[in-house]
Image (tube, rainbow, N blue to C red; front, side):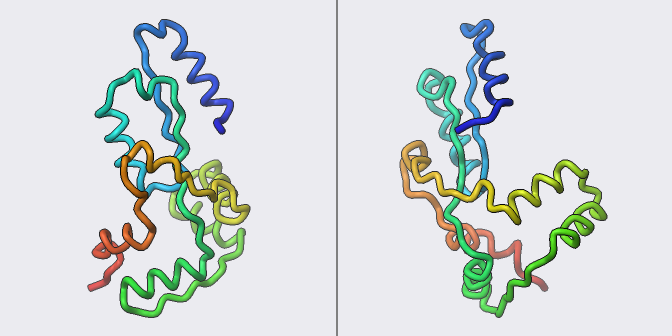
Length: 145
């Protein structure tokens, strides 16, 4: 499924299509997206031309995500639900613009974009990395000294 903006980009690419190729990676999660981009850019243009690949990860509850963090980091992590208002104020005070924070609220509170795109394993030619595997590989980003 793609958006109206992607339709417009596809239409633009169709003008002088002999000179332009287009692949859209539509991220819902970022765990596998960089590896997907590498594969797409490494393979023949004809294989991926005019393709739109949605990239989404397995969905966990916030409590389950806290359990995974606790397991990998070896410390107790508790999830606390923030109100929409507090979420908005916190992000605006961090110099994010309104439209970005609004979209983040849709993702965080409405559950939009929360679906796994298991078919991405076909492009990567390997099983998708799990959240726990990604966290284990990036543990240094979450450790405090």
